[in-house]
Image 1 (spheres, one colour):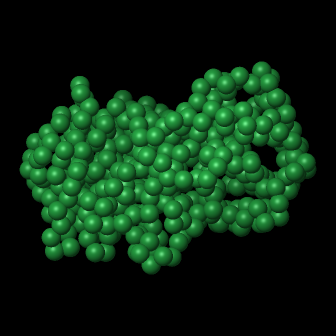
Image 2 (tube, rainbow, N blue to C red; image 1 turned 60 degrees about the vertical axis):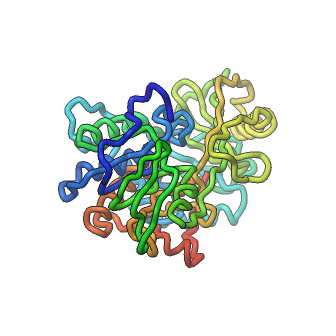
Image 3 (cartoon, rainbow, N blue to C red; image 1 turned 90 degrees about the vertical axis):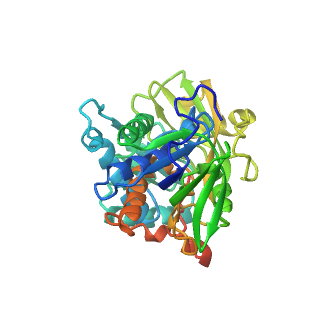
Length: 405
């Protein structure tokens, strides 16, 4: 446990209606949504192993939102996220809450061959049917609208400048925690080390401090440790930590406009980041599971993969200065790169909200609302997330999300 934590180490009660395991972005969203639900009046405990959050996915996020997804449900989730961001002061219900700007420079997906272009065309139809403003660009149209791209090897582009870009997710995270605690949610600095089941239900959890707590329901919001938490309840979960790398750089010759978050066929993505630029990519070799606490940076990636890809795509970026870099871990769903949400059929009081595969920040508003609805009503009410149920995992029937960066 972390010393000098803002959270106490021990809970105030021995019995809670809901225990949320993990208090980062997703856990905080669940806690706040549940606390403000007028039809839920139970007790809520959030157990967070490290309230500094320095090793959480929340601390390593690039905090972006987009609607360019393969699946209709993901588009709807992100459209709700944009609404939540725009209306944040009213939604949080506090006159002191700040406006949260959404810097809509958009995402730009670039296809280098006909099969990749066909995926963009299919995705655009799904997105447009949900109300997204995604537009397809021929190489000629791209050259006219975005003259800084090198396009000799590109056959199609897909861009949506509406409600896609960067937002200050960390401020939302801070307010969720603050308001949840004001509404009676307890946050403690401790670790769940085991669970006891009986009759197909989790009866108790045990903390690292040795205390046992009786529970009504458990919510697994453990990020990259989601599989560990599930195993405590005797359940399997195909979620593992996978490393992703971020690089912030300064351009000697900056672009005259914002750079859309450009998803290059090389696997590198790059976008505007204030007066700097931010790039990212997966590992150069096999994309394997890592330890949840492994944040070791691979500095060869910048010289050997990222910079060459950026300079090829945007020749104006031949002269760059690396300012900062870090590594973070996705909570990666190995089955289909989509979220796993809702109760387990064999253990109905154990709820998943896991496996976001890099989409957790932007999906947090909808996920917190959905879990609060399930706990209050036994069903999803405002947005049906049953497509994300654990049953598809048990049946081996993936809901594949192709637009994973």
